[in-house]
Every structure is written in structure tokens, then in C-alpha cells.
Amino acid sequence: MKQRFLGRSGLRVSELCLGTMTFGQDTDEAEAHRVLDTFAEAGGTFVDTADVYQRGVSEEIIGRWLKGRRRDGLVIATKVFGTMDEAPNAGGLSRKHIVRAVEDSLRRLGTDHIDLYQTHVWDATTPVEETLATLDTLVKAGKVRYLGASNLSASQLQRSQDLARRNGWEPYVSLQPLYNLLAREVEWELAPVSLAEGVGIIPWSPLQGGWLTGKYRRGMTAVEPGTREARYQQELGREAWRERDDERTWRVVEAVVAVAEEAGRTPAQLTDSLGAAGWELTPEQTARLDAASERPLPYPYDVLHRFRDREPQD
Image (cartoon, rainbow, N blue to C red; front, top):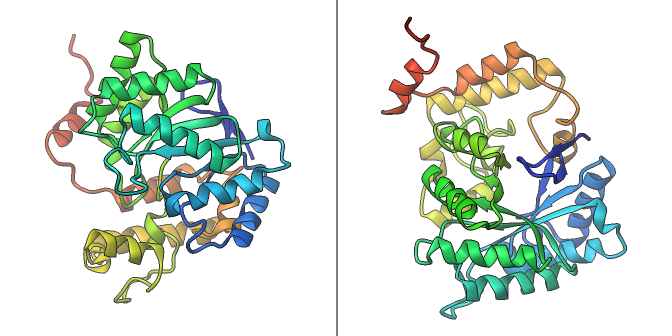
């Protein structure tokens, strides 16, 4: 598996990152360790978790797997924000919570440092200066190597990078947004800002909760019960099928399945997903997926798109 630099940093990570949100819930510890072993044996080095995943259980499972392994050969990423209990400062991105949270994550992971420490979501109740200054002290103390963010708007990411630059603080080197063929809004502003700022993009939910695995087909009438997507939609108080059951979704799903079959691949699952490394779609296949997943752009993106390749006048 190829190694890539994360953003404009000197940190090398495997081209595939293993997400561990299901560890301790759908995936018990024995199975989780088998998944981690399979990933590592295939050359994967980049493992992502969060303090809030099963209230820290995901981190604990990874920590027990790390024992006896060569720590420098792995890049362990986790996130901070989640509310672990009802105490007033048990969540968010205040200095008080971050300092406590990083110590808790280090203990659960059984390591003396976190390679990539990510803010899980924007905290509108804490001054961003307080958050960034606190994160900078963690890097200087050696507890954290690099900083990342997740679930920011383009203006929030740009503001964070500008403040870090102005104050000499460590900047974000990565962004973890929702990004897949059914959710391409990242391309409107977040991707351009990330490219300009040298921020690497680590998509979450690249298979859109199972919608792009090929298991859902036109004519079905409900999300598979008990799946992560079903639970997620229930938590949000939304009806997943009603939101996705439209012509665009089925056009994208059918294009993914067709291109996968044509390429001799499958849309998803662990061992199949590992096969995504080391090869590329043809330009024609990429164009077909782009065309299938396109949607009309809202203003002002429609106007900007029309003029982006306009030749200058003499």
C-alpha cells in the first residue's frame, strides 16, 4: 500500500485509513483486532478513532492491539469534542476539556503521544483562539504530533488557519469531512480552501453509510434494520429511505456497481476495500461516476463554475 504525505506536512500515512467507529458496538474486540491485523498486513498504517466512539471503548480496543507493536510504524488519529458525561465541562473545545480529554485518550490508547489529534466539530461556544492556543501547547509538549479538524465550514477552516499563522501556532494539516459520490458539497468551498492551505482531506463515510456498497438497489423499500445507517438516521430523527429514494441516488448506485463490475472489483467491505489501493479508475470510468453524481449547483457556485475556465480578454 502506498504512503502519502498528509497535506503539506511531513507526516506519511497509508493511502487508505481504517475508521473504527464501530469498534465496541457492531464489532467486538476479537473481530476488531482481526480487522486491524488484516489492515496492517496489507500495508495499512493509518488508524482513525475518536474519544466519543462508544464512550472511549474504541480507543481502548486499539490501545490493547497496540501493545507489543512497533509504535513508530503506525499513525494513530483520534478526535476531541464528545461529551462523555453530564458535567458542565465534559465536552466541547475549551482549554479545560481538551487538556483532560487528551490525557484520557492517551491512557485509553496506551501510548505517550497521538500522531493526529483532531477537533471533531466546530465549537461555537468557545473562542477559537482558546482552542487553537491549547492545541498548540499539546504539540509543544510532545503529547500530540499533528493537528486536524473535522466537520468545519470553509470559513471556519480559513479562520482557523489564519489565526494559527498570525499567532505562530500549529495549523491544521488535515480535514475530515463527509465526502462521497452522494455528498459532493465539499467540492464547492472546502476542497479549494484545503488545497490552498495545504490541508489534506480524509473523507468520512466514503460509502455513505452503506448506500454505495451495492447492497441497496432500485426497488427496495427500506434501509437494512440494525445497520449503522439505520441507527444514525434514527438518532437524527430522520427517515433514511425517504431522503435517499430518488432518481439521483439510484443513478449513482447503479453507476458505481457497473464501474466496479467492469473493473473487476466490488463496491466495498474490508478485504474488498483494501483492494482499492494500488490501482486507479480509467479517465472514462471517473467521468461516468462524475456525471452520474452531478447535481445542479446553487448560487453562487453555478455562476462561479461557468466562469472558472474563462480565457482572459486581450
